[in-house]
Length: 503
Image (cartoon, rainbow, N blue to C red; front, side, top):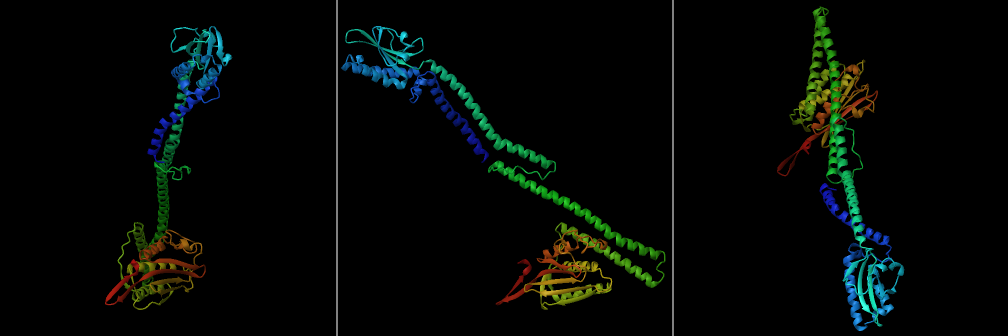
């Protein structure tokens, strides 16, 4: 519920609830007071007599006296008729009133002598000058009407209210107390409702924000909140903020861990070639290489180690570009047969020097083309091949790498397979993650920054392709990656070019 709606409901409740409760209190107090005066006749309470006994009684008796006078015009001695007097008694009983008729100084008629006992001795005699309604000393309301009996005796009809005038004072006192209690209860109810629906959620949000301030992103707000207004929106916004901050903090921790691991890997990778360069250069300086052939061998080793260091630096530079999503690409149309043929010549010469056999087959048509960055695709192939050579772990010269180019209608698939140690099945889904190493696929003795295959995956995906690996321990590993073809076809007189990469 929206907060504006709650304020509107509260404003209405401040008026309506006390009115309803006050009305209920008035009805209850009136019945209670009537019962306390022992005049409750079981009928519906006449609240006119309860709240204004003087005015209501005066109005009722004026009407009754007029009716009696009219009746006396027809029958002057009708007040001698006890049946008629009984009818009057029954008529005014609903107003908690009754009549007493006196003849001279004796009681001629009274319906309930016990009820009249308290007031009968306070009634004035015939011929008094009291006009209208008057009060007795016991605070009863009385209306007197004098007449003559048929035998000439003096008679008086007294209409008496059973409700004492003190009832009005009691009603005012009780109602004042009731209104104070009603306002107090209303205030408590509304304060509790507003507190539970507004102040309590705000306090919980304040506690939650304190946890955020202290770096605790795992603190969750109570899940029993069902608000749909501003408070509910604040709860949902807090939860979204908490999850994003937690994700950011986890990424930061993971990034710090990766950077530490990267530094450790770089230190290891640089230490090995530097140690070799230092050792062989020292050998040259000290004359250990005492023949031209030996000196040339030392120089070649130093050159190779320097190239390894240069490759590592290039890899780190590319890693930085990947991390910032700023790899520079130069996409051009490439003929698959010509491009991969040139790559194989370069790779073959290098593998031959390492006593690794290379097998190459291209099953695509001679005119097959792709749109790619030649330099980055060559980096992919070199990274995968170098990774395979590094972990062939064969000293008998039986290392072998097979490179196959397969035609898949609208794309080509490149497979690079080795006969190395292979990768455990549980590790295959993770080998493209940054800094991931396994004893089977990335033996720590071989070094490696652990980012080579993650770079490969990034480049292939940026070309609109995808890459995966299959492997069997002890048999070897095969890397598969797919690139879409560049297709050009004619439609009537118009030539249409389709670049699958951008589809």
